[in-house]
Length: 378
Ligand SMILES: *Cc1c(COP(=O)(O)O)cnc(C)c1O
View: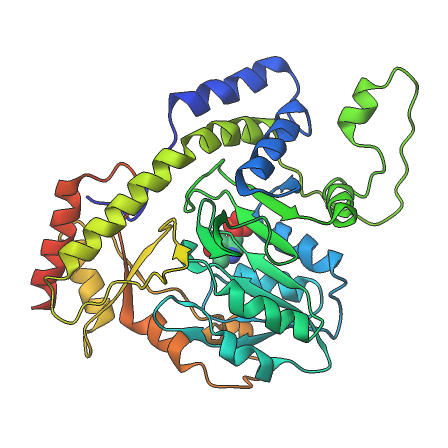
């Protein structure tokens, strides 16, 4: 069986986790602090705050920007449902715009028309690790006085060429970026998330909110030689990352350069191999973007039966997935009035296929995937 994805974890992560267990300090301790510092340095961000997952990272990002009841947030439907759920969690309404069919990312040309007096923020998604066109989105956000949140759940290690140089996603280039550390992403700690920002005050709020609104972090109280009594200036949440996860995360960060190199080699190889199948289109990578290829999504030839192709691949022991979901087509969002048609999003969902891609994948496995796809499509 060739699976869709396999997390790149091993003895280094197991030993790091064991070390934390034996240390006796299991959450909000030195490993979380070290992981945050290393993560911030890696993406070039002044501040990185570790939380339980990317969904709560998005929730806190929206709260920091003051998104609340009655507000609207412009985002894409063609994304994992968590992007919109986080908006609803704030009492706000997602307003969906279409995507660019080549890269599966937010169409900057559609954003201005979706902005109303109730719009409070723009939430773009670096879908499957492919950077959004930030050079186009940032001026639109600025022109309307709106903050830009980057859903970078899939985009650790992805790069964008801006201001004359290559930069990692997460600096952030918008106001706040949110990452996921779920096993389906490029790095994982089981479940985890990171929020990056240049704004010290927002970073302070994230730290307050993730820990029940408690004014004194555990580490500060632990290290104090004087009695410290905390207070609770605001209503918070329990959105903590544990030290066990953070220790695993530090090992994952060390692996990142190798993982990215492998994934890019595999993507290049797919592109070359797929050129031999008529009608199959590989994903586009604009000259200003370098994806981490969290997922590899190909367009099927016109008229292909997506489900039948997936079943035939599965019968050949190869896992695939349909293209990214469309939130507006899910029952949970059926009550949301649809303001504009989203043809590119719907086509991407129904006419594309995710192929297996993971660092441990061999050239033989890749050849088998492409040979099978060719046979299935004939
Ligand atoms: C995976 C994903 C999320 C949710 O991440 P969790 O860490 O599972 O909460 C959010 N947005 C996008 C685009 C994702 O792919």
